[in-house]
Amino acid sequence: MKCLFLFFFLSISLLSSAQALLKSNDLREQWHVLEKDKYVEYAGQKRKAIHFSLTRADGGSNLTIFDQREFSVFINGKLMARSLDTIRWKTDSLLSRYQGNIFISIYQDQPIYSLQTRLERPVQSSSFENPTRKTDYFKDFVILASFILLALLAVLFRINPRLTFDYLNVIKLFSAQERDDAIVAGRIGSSVNLFFFGFISFLLGLILIVIFNLAADRIPLAGNFIFYSTQQGFLLWILLSVLVFIILILKLILITGFALLFNLRGIARFQFFNFIRILFITSLLMGGLALLYFVFHLHSSALFYNLLVICFIFVLAGTVFLFLKLLTRTSFPIFHLFSYLCATEIILLMILGKVVLF
Image (cartoon, rainbow, N blue to C red; front, side, top):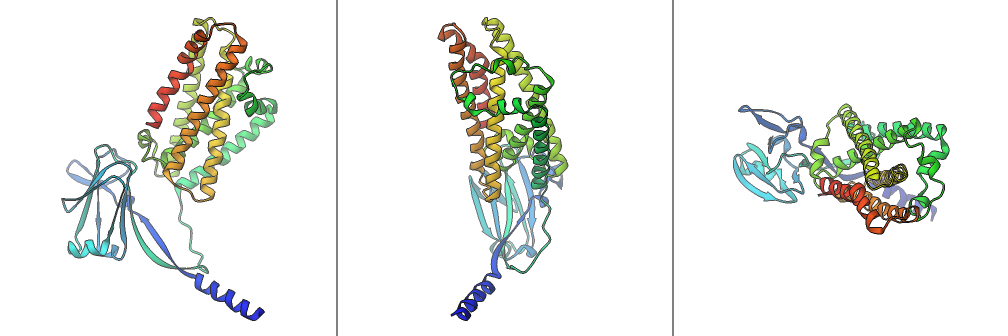
């Protein structure tokens, strides 16, 4: 019986050691764009049309063209298809129909940034093979940036563990009454708090970079943050994080100005501290979900787009609880507080949602 079980196990192992896999080659490196009546290699230029060729060496595979935005495909200058999702063609059929001379052009109404073109072919792979892993600039950037953020978080925790736990206190975030935040919020301009603002800006910037690159077909703004090397990824990360930090400082100035205008002088620092707490907790939640997606190889653009939706919902919920907290802290009428929140929170949230989500 043991011999039979061993024979069955070895048979299954040998059968699985030579299984058919699907090898996918990205054709982006073969893209060309038209500049001054000449075809030059595509390097992220904002163009509405890209061009590439297929040769007989590409036979025996499937050509896949995908985008959530509508695109038109021309072969040798003739319109062949118009699609809003995915087109798959067998290269053997194309090569035989056009005698091995295939020049493909893809056109969109807006500059191309999320279009995908791939050649897929089945290959035999053995489980005993150990091929050299191809470098992936996107994964390299995400891993290195994540280690940098973990190191910064450890430094922040060592500098001021109480403040770190205050920022991560979910119970206080969704509580209608708070009594012990005045001390922490009173030091909103301290160097430690500014360090936290910088960390949150870089954390949120990294998450946005990941979402923009993996859900580019769903976010119009994402076309400005697509990168093609690790160095370019770090440069975009720094620029986006600095932009987020500047927006946070401008929001603090805006809250302070409207607090004086609405005669709510003691509210500005507490309100901004509450907003930073929302961003910190939401960013960590989004980062944790993104990590799970990577672990389980879930690369659907809808999943990463929904991370922004989750962030929007959390900020909106935090604004509702902020309104309840202000009711307990002040004696102003409800309409007065609601008008103040419209000016400092709700209108800004609607504008941001319109720009990023739609």
